[in-house]
Length: 437
Length: 176
Image 1 (cartoon, chains in turn cyan, brown):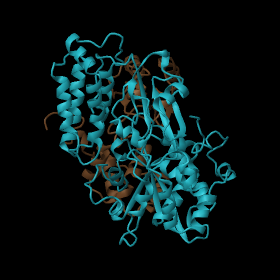
Image 2 (tube, rainbow over the protein chains, first blue to last red):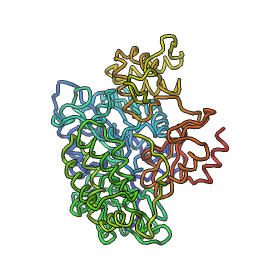
Image 3 (spheres, rainbow over the protein chains, first blue to last red):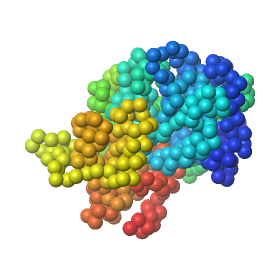
Image 4 (tube, chains in turn red, blue):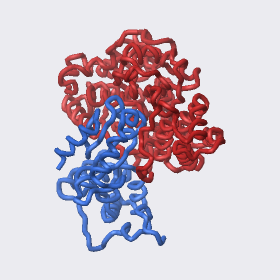
């Protein structure tokens, strides 16, 4: 499969963040077209027809999400952009924000028009992306100066403006109700659903939360039509898609392909294969939450449905490649540590369970494991999964369960021989003190 | 209550010193007024106001918690609850250079722990600690969203990508 430049068409241009560069490529014409020649329902229908699915992780059909917004809600409707890109292995939204911010802004204008958003909207960007926030602020100023944001945009009578809202370092705020809480100025602890955000979201109004990449697709759909968008990928898994490849590969980075390139093709044909030409051990296909795949499972297309069928998920398309030299227990411990750190503390199974997973994995790695620990990990995972308000608990057990099932030998080796499997490396030093969460 | 752990909300250093007066400088006041116009409720301005306060004072002291609470009609407990929930609000002073080493999986397999351990040893600090001269604070952080150019070290607001121990040493020479 050939690499494409659709969503990333602008990023290599010199001065790609300036509005002049963006407009020279036909920028903001799609928003003008949508606002002046189409009705909001027509835009929503167009996005539905394109079969665009959310790029943030869940893969929910975007057009359907927009049509759930009630028409006569007593409170104003809100559009929020989720730029809290914190899933380990994912770095695609950052590329769009830092290199082509106007594509995102134009997508937001069209989306806001379709859902009948009130005149203010927020881009929730993770606090660490300080540079990205400054790029966005500058781009927003440019768009305001041209009249693309503000009152009566394109003479259509539609008022709309965007504020950059910086997060402050919490993975959980990428969960949509956690994000909503955080925009309201609270701790980012997810809400009980229902009511879903489409009914009661931020500030009590109906709310649509969309990922950066999803919104970036919208102007392209308006420009080229739903059929064009569907010409990429396979039915139900349509469109150009950004894949983030990291870990033990020769050429890591963001790659754009029609949705459905296989993992094997991506790693070996485009990323130059494994570092040091070592053998592959495992691939995490969709960010830290996605269950691992072994080398004989990687000949599958990277789309929502195929990976779901294989017992994993596309998630945010953050592909982490681990070679044969990686100690799998150590790798899974690092992910468990992440989830223990990021659990918001609201639901007991997740708050306690993620910490237990981390400490049991740590003791196995230190050679203090017990023979029954592999099963203990599975048992604990069972008591976390599906027992919390949001998906963080389920995310935390993904790598644990899959690694215990697929690499049980390695776990048992640690318990029996009190050391890593010969030929594998532990990357951290066990004598270094570990900071508290 | 007896032990004075840094996270203990009853620890004496959690209470504001009545003799210390904090107030935004003029520039920051203007910025704060602008922030208020962007949100439908005062409470929603809490996160950006705390970012602003951290820019001004470098950390969120108990006095700042009370000051921000007063500005936004929130109780100090509410403000402190938010400050302690989010990672990026410093609950104690940090060094001039806040060295934040990502050690999550993609960075770990590209040897981020080597950089982290090297920093702790070279600067003789414990994880999360600050050097005696107040120049550097070293912390291990979770994924910074720069996995394609791992390992990454964030110094204050800036990313330094594709790092290794040698590059880190060279960077330390510049950060003085």
